[in-house]
Length: 146
Image (cartoon, rainbow, N blue to C red; front, side, top):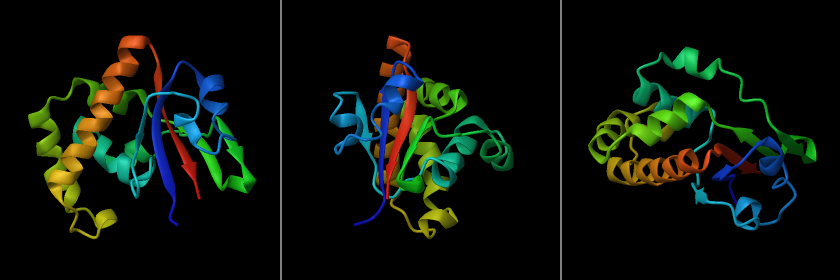
């Protein structure tokens, strides 16, 4: 079994942190969730953020994604996503997401061979999550379980 990455929306850090001990993560808490196997919130989503926003990758990954919750010596984490990424996802239309998926699919993190259609669909799911979060005043997070 690999690392699980569940991206979800929650009203605040406390609500997000409360998911840390739930066996099913944020879905068990009935929070809007997108499950993405193999797409971490740090490097891979940092690359997507750089491509979506035009901000240099080094600047993106230098942003603080300090966990709002951690358990089992870091084997489980809940980390907030950046406001910049959330806004970029929310604002992106389907064409823009497909444009970003092309160079993202060729990155080293995906071995340069990810399917761009799959990545575009993944970005579309995240964009929908971001739009819903924005409409409710929520924030985006990632529940990580090793």
